[in-house]
Amino acid sequence: MILSLVFAFGIFALLWPYFIAIRAMDFNKNSETMEPRLQGRPARRTIGRINSDISVTIYTVYAFYTVLCVAFYATPEFRGVISDAVLLIIVIALSAFAFYFVEMANRKAYAYITMGQIAVIHLCCSVSSFIAFNYLVHGNDIILQNGLAVVGLAIGLMLIFSRKLGRK
Amino acid sequence: MESLIYIIAPLSITALILFICMFGHLKFGFISLKSVQKIGAVIGALYGYLYFTTMYNLLVDYSVFLSRIHYTNLVIFLIFAILIGFYSRRITPDFIQIIGLCVFGTSAYFLLA
Image (cartoon, rainbow over all chains, first blue to last red; front, side, top):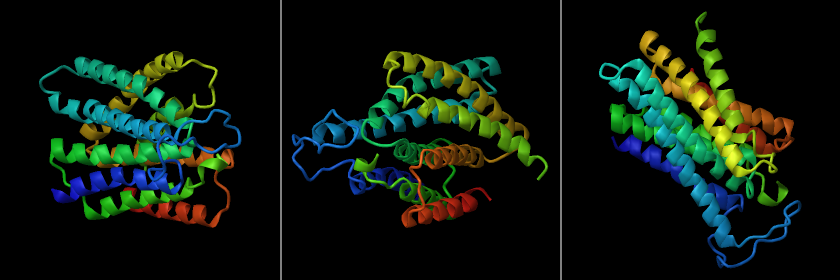
């Protein structure tokens, strides 16, 4: 029980150290400080706004994957109760709803980080919400080997897309 | 082994649709956010239909584990991101990125094999 929740929370919490390490977020400076001038980015924002925007993106993507997990993996449980056509309509409606909101988050984050770094957010949020959902709804505890492999996957992708913000 | 292609192919297509929907519009700043959201919702509905039917078939008819389906789709999605990273030269032969690729590949093997 504890293992699933530890992995789910741990993988999700990895995102903040990662973005601090690549200097996309900075919680040490005063939040009203303006960001340094970067090549190809004429608009300058405050450090506080950058931290806030990236955090909002992470939470939105997490909510997106939670809705998708509910749509895809919870609805088959009701296949004896509801007809397949109605299930499909519910899934399609939930997917469209989730995608409508996540597009905004992706675009907001792209002002500060690269596409690969957004993919890191997607990986961590997808895996974290799936592990938590799989345990809480289906009662499947994660296997230690799978958990370590997922952490390795996240760390590997973080290393691949570890270029600093100024080199975007 | 022969049926592997029937698992990989539909999941690859859904992962490609997800990838295009997530990141395809990032370079097109001239398209308004509202338009992107509407197009995203339409593609999201298509993705929902295709992924759900694929997942449902694999889960119910072929008894593939749910986690295996989810992780396969996710890893293929990430492979597309890495390929675009190579194409756009974000991934260069830096030592740390090569280490990252090795860690990613090894972890993906242990997760899916």
